[in-house]
Length: 239
Ligand code: 6PG
Image (cartoon, rainbow, N blue to C red):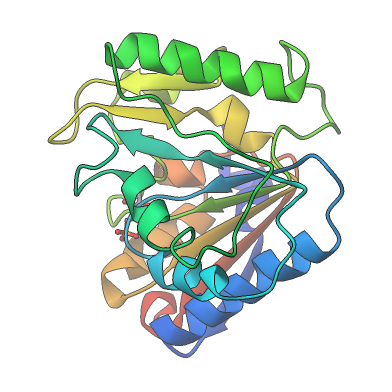
């Protein structure tokens, strides 16, 4: 857990003017990382609404995704064509332009039970990593995009839920806390990232952003192995 003293999670804060500038800057960071990527370049795609605009920009840019393997930070336990599905959101944005062809796209299963789906995703992650235990200095993910909830959650690491204590599995079910059960990457998986890029937009996130960077709340509890960049618009940064 991140203790206030060693808050690596504070990372670097970059403030941009507004939501449109945030989308453009996020797309630029992803494109820069793709430009230097070697296979396998594992990317976590955040769910939620904030990343939509960045995904829409990337959908029509000429980037080379052939080294990329795409994963999801979390998923709502609904069918892939459900309006709440993060996979559907990515399909309708990032993949809509027909130019983004990753080597692999690993959607989180939402069939069977939440528990079995989480176990299957956990297994996919271990297969792609090539080992069953995470090695310091050998990140599971090379770029992890995450959002921030106004309650301080990220992915589906929701306040007060047992998943916050999960330190063995890399993916877990979150049966309570939201309208639908969720499947989420866990702290061990998210912490094994070379770069975590948080995308935070809007005045409603101001308090959660300030607290998270001080190590408070589920997002603040991440103990990152790599770098952390908080990309926020002026409204979220309180400027
Ligand atoms: C989800 C996301 C979740 C999201 C935050 C912020 O599935 O909803 O993974 O963690 O990133 O709730 O959501 P917004 O970007 O919609 O504010």
